[in-house]
Amino acid sequence: MDQQINGIKIHTTESSPDRKMTKKIEAHIVNVDSKVDFLNDYHQDHQIQKPNKWRHRIKILSLISILFIFLLGSLLFSNYLLAHQTGDAFSASLSKINLWEQLARLIGVDESVAEPRDRINFLLMGMGGSGQEGPFLTDTIILASIKPSTMQTSLISIPRDLAVRYSDNYYPKINELYTIGWKSNVKEPGAFAANVIAENFDTMIDYYVVVDFNGLLEIVDLLGGLTIDVETSFIDHQYPAPEFEYQTIEFIAGVQTMDGDQVLQYTRSRHGNNGEGSDFARSKRQQKVLFALKEKILTYYTFFNPYKITKLYNLFSKYIETNIGIKEAVSLYDLFSEIDPAGAVQVTLDDAPTGLLTSAITEEGAYILKPKGGFETLREMINNIFDSNETKAENATVQVQNGSLTAGLAFTVTQQLRQYGVSVSGFKNAATQDYQRTIIYDLSDGQMPLTSALLQDVLKDALITTNIPSHLQTPEEEPALDFIVILGQDIDYHNNLDIIDDRL
Image 1 (cartoon, rainbow, N blue to C red):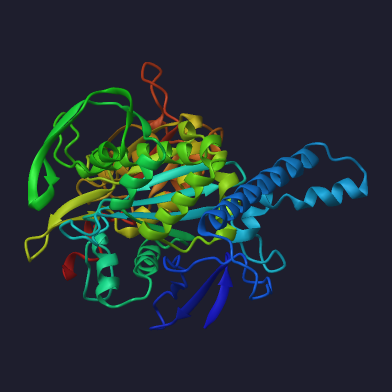
Image 2 (cartoon, rainbow, N blue to C red):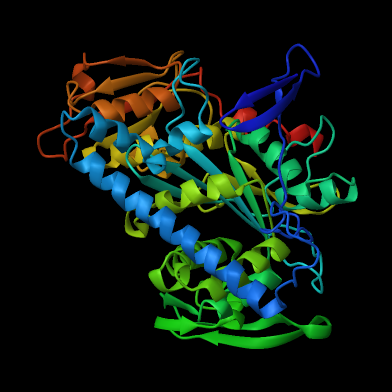
């Protein structure tokens, strides 16, 4: 069955009564070989001499410049009208030409049916490309989100070794999905990978972008390099070189301008010293490069340079697979230009003590990562990432106690809450381990509503109360607590650490 959701054509099929509907994104790939003939509609006499190639190029570049000037002018004019609206009906009507302010409607559903979503999700995937070992493995995977109403932004780096569900009996690593689609002769393997990831995380992916890293080098060089603030110096003696050999690369801490080769090395290095040798450290560097690339592309000198615009278009067509069309790109431009990197929520999923993942070895001896509390834990974090960021401002202090017979349960829940940004002062066993139901004691007397809502969302079946038993009252000589969570038998993370344990 086909339906329109958020500006994307969705094909849904129902494989079984108890299985969720599978969302299929009908994607569009830029046709590399297609050429735009701006003179096609003119019925010129065959005797008229055609312009030479040089004049033709000048006309196309001039047209591109005029288009960008028109778009910028309409943006400034419509924003001016919005900012200076009066009771004049004509002025009010003109102000509606501000298409940029209607981005949510562009990707949202019809307002007559439902309110548009206040969130836009992008899946960014990067692969090595031709000449690399495993050319179609997307070792770089980032889920980026924007909340248009508040201009909040988040970047969630997903490690390549995370095992995901593809079928009942097959749980590949997430970086293999594009390759699976390509080998299966899927027309748009990027859309195929995005569908599987969206289903595992139970979230809508509006747009996807797959980048061949060979193109990143050329794009950065065309832009004149990127300015990057390297936080930590490191040396990598095992960076891949041609003919499957290795070379040594080094980066010194500090602000510097990198060319295409250096940016590629900075984003792909996986064996650096000084704490920069993990996939998680690499993910943080990739997020930094993304923001630097965004700033450079959206600069005045890039957008008013017809040569660069034409070259960028050709490079994007050659090295990028995406379902973002020209109409969407024009609207997204204004949105991206307002994003402040300093305010972005940046998360890297990892298996650190406070992380949401845990490492494991399959029966075949492969290293994988799994969610500690199943994919439901990751879904809650992703879907509530903007709310949890606002919750931090309350600065509430929480203590977690284990009132169940499941050993280590308080530690596991503490890790999850800290991932959401909750300040957990500590965890311990409760006075007794016979709690059947999880209880949230609100010592703030309702003064921390966002934290309270987050705790109830994470611990869905928990009871919450402001009636505090005397034995839980915080002594005056100890730091005050805002919440005490006592975990009951209704939460059993250890018996359900991962639904795929028995199938790997």
